[in-house]
Image (cartoon, rainbow, N blue to C red):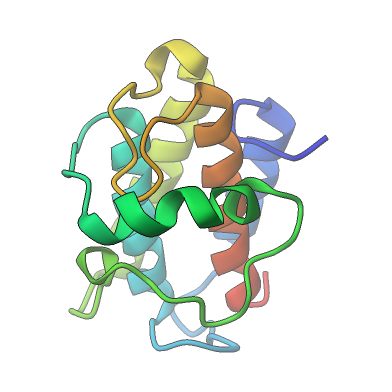
Length: 150
């Protein structure tokens, strides 16, 4: 069974890994530093929680259905996978602030369960079930924690 953020053990594992990050932790690939990566993950957690509701983009409407199975499947994302430009964090961020924000998003999402999950369509994949949101968020954050070797 795939890991997901509704499972308390899976959420704790992700939070424990985030706690191992430091401002000096270097990425093994990609352009973001650790603070930027956590801010990037928080953007997607805000969407999963329904705090932000971006509109669907044409690229997502066209490609989303074609890659949805890969995104939510068991296979890890490839290193340096393309990122929607609206989710790129390139400005300077405060490490501890981003760390606390991301941990809080994960705790709130995990503890809230399916009822606290958005029913707004994902900007790339469209309509998702709460289970897909929970698996997708776990897999996305896991991907970025691997990027930083934790």
